[in-house]
Length: 147
Image (cartoon, rainbow, N blue to C red; front, side):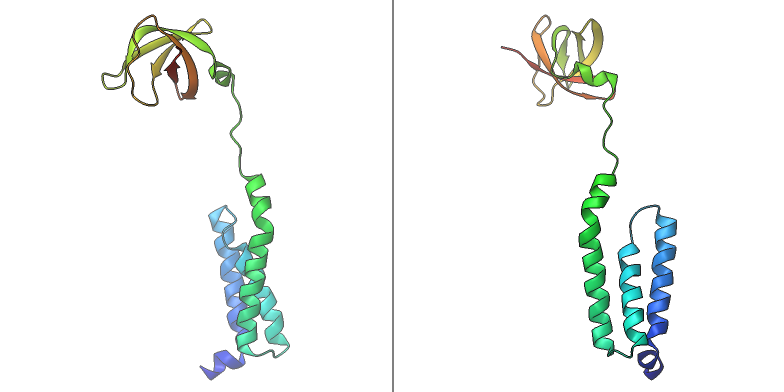
């Protein structure tokens, strides 16, 4: 135990290497913050700063790095790209086949195209009713009746 306390730089170096390896195999920002904290604590250990302060430096630097990069990570996350199918959302249509989520039936015609249709809330919509598209998921349009 005395060896570790007297040679904390080894602990921080191992933690740094392990964090980098985890980051490399995860393909996501997963442990880079801990690698930065480990480097800061490693530098502190080389200046013979007390172990408690090294741990505090590790925690503070890791937390600060996480907090500073969080907005950047959110920006980098893939946003859903709009597709041609998105043009059907918020468009009027007419029911060609009664929409019944339980039976799994329903077809609507929107912008001249026939789609399988469902309702978000499970209400049944009769044939020939006017509807408005509220969402699209895969090959199904989700609609609501227009009064």
